Image 1 (cartoon, rainbow, N blue to C red):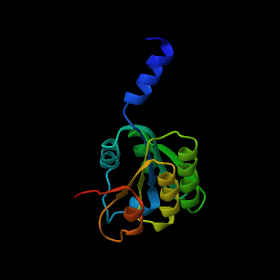
Image 2 (cartoon, rainbow, N blue to C red; image 1 turned 180 degrees about the horizontal axis):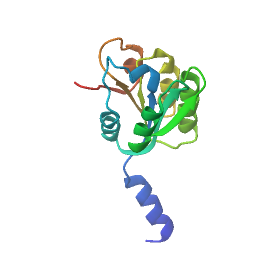
Image 3 (cartoon, rainbow, N blue to C red; image 1 turned 90 degrees about the vertical axis):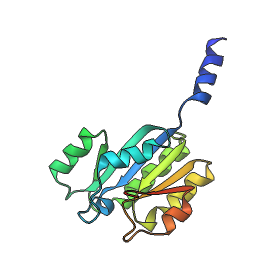
Image 4 (tube, rainbow, N blue to C red; image 1 turned 120 degrees about the vertical axis):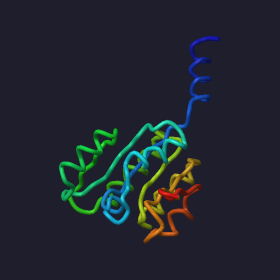
Length: 151
């Protein structure tokens, strides 16, 4: 088997690449008691974590940022609402074929169009909710699969 055949075979037998996007202000709230290790584990069930990003606004504490980085998250700090930055980054991952699975952790329906784009590109999509309280039905309905942490 030549090098090209081995590379092709390795690519098609490899674990799916998972891009994990966490809407920090929406899910990292006291009422949800979300553990970032549980978030990683939920996404890891779908394949190898290729991208792990936690989006926070400028009000995020240094302790939160440090804890997230210690758990392997790339922390993206935005000035203001994180939704647009997260949605654009997610869509970019999709169109650049950087993932096989897109997992989003949020309760926010604003990400429904980004999941729909991922679906159109043939990716497996996962909506991960921090709990049932305040969860939007739109995300689980738009995703190919859904998970509720703590269930």
